[in-house]
Length: 326
Image (tube, rainbow, N blue to C red; front, top):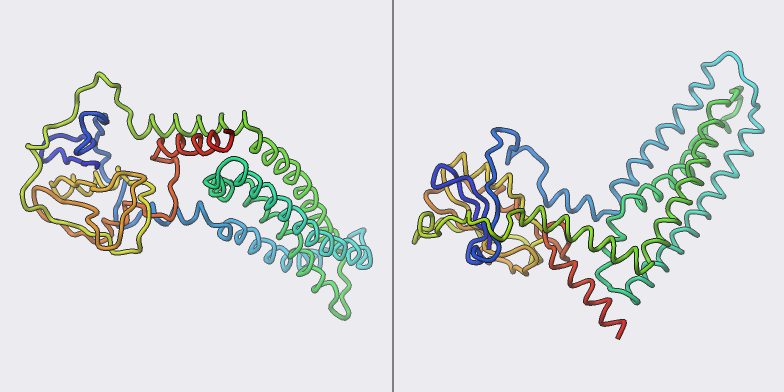
């Protein structure tokens, strides 16, 4: 349980409620109007974006469609050029047919690697691959090369077209080079991820970073305020209105800002990594009342745990690997 205490009530601290004596936090200073509860992107939206295999590749797809329309128009506006339409058709046709097959081959191999990692190490690593930005960029570049070639080819095949497509061919070749480079980077990333030494090093690094961020105080630092000073007998309760899930993270800075503005204490009931059901208590507001609109969004509920604010999850992954090694 995490209690975020407003300096208006006691002091500007982030602490651990019932478990305060064993997991203290460090004083967190107010940050003025840097964070706005109503306008910044919620942690829940950021979590969806990080786990989505659609959002980032969709940007590449949109850019490829735009380039496929703009590049032939640029060529049409130019007075000179060295390439002819026949050469451009050959290059674009080969790019379109080759890249769609290449993308399918790479993604099939990637799924085999993910299946291997889930079976040999831990199924909890599947989400790790899914959140990898290099994998998303790779999918986007492969699809961009394919779609750009198709759209540009459609423009060059128009009857009576007299375009000298130097720019169109140049962009297609640039996308092919980019696809080759990112394929090699992806191959290196995936092969490294399935090596035990690299896997444990990555999990350990994420766990240490998460622990330092979540529990920054040293064991000798006694900074936890007495709960008697801020707990009240009849607090305002905010319940979880969404579907059941796991607490993936807590947006502490935004909750702290909301508490400072309202002059209250916001107590987060479930700890990060705990399961929470619908209509279960999520927040308690002590020392007054405040508008709870969008307040619950600052506690990110997901389908699975992550290491971001849950270093114990890294230990769970290592235990999974150890069990399979027996």
